[in-house]
Length: 237
Image (cartoon, rainbow, N blue to C red; front, side, top):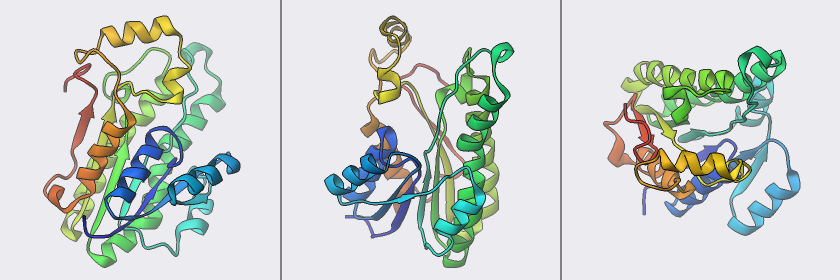
C-alpha cells in the first residue's frame, strides 16, 4: 500500500472523477470527493464507497477558499468540467464563460488555495484532467477546447514554479471515455469516433484513474510538467 496521503478530487462523485476517487482510496489515501449539484447522488456515492464528499462551486474562488482553506491536501486532482457545445458563431456568451470558469478558472481557484500548503509541507501532487480536444481542437467546442488547452499551459507553468518544493504538476488528456456524457451522444456519432481510435474502443474511467494513481505516487517523482495522452492512439503528440 502507498504511503497514506490526503487527496481531493473535484467533480469526484461521477464518471471519471468517481473512478479516480475510488482508486486513490484503494491506494490507501484519505480522499475527499467534491461535487457541485446533486446532493442525493453524492450522499449515495458516500454510502457506497465510504469516501467523504464536500459540496462547493469550484468556479467560485470565495466558495473554494471557504471550503478548503483549512484542508491540508497532499494530492489535488482538478477533474471538474462541463461542456456547452455549439459552433462559435451561434455560441451564447454565457456558454463561453461557464465552460471557462468551471474547466479553467477552477484550476486557479483550487491551486491558489491548496498549493501554498503543499509548499509549506514540501510535498505535493497536482494532476489536471485536460482532454484530447484541448490538444487537437474539436468543431463545436471552441470554449471547451480553449479551456482544456489552457489547463495544459497552466500545468507547465505551475510545474516550473513548484518543482523545487517537491511538488509535481502534470496533466492527463483522456480521449473518448465511457461515461454518462458519451453515453448521451448519438449512436452514429459514437460509432464514427470509435473508428478513429486505433485501439478499436473507447476508454474506461478506470484507465484514467490508474494514470492518476501513478502520477500521485512517489514512483512518479521525476515526472513534472508532463502531458499524458490516454486516448487509445486516436491523437499522438
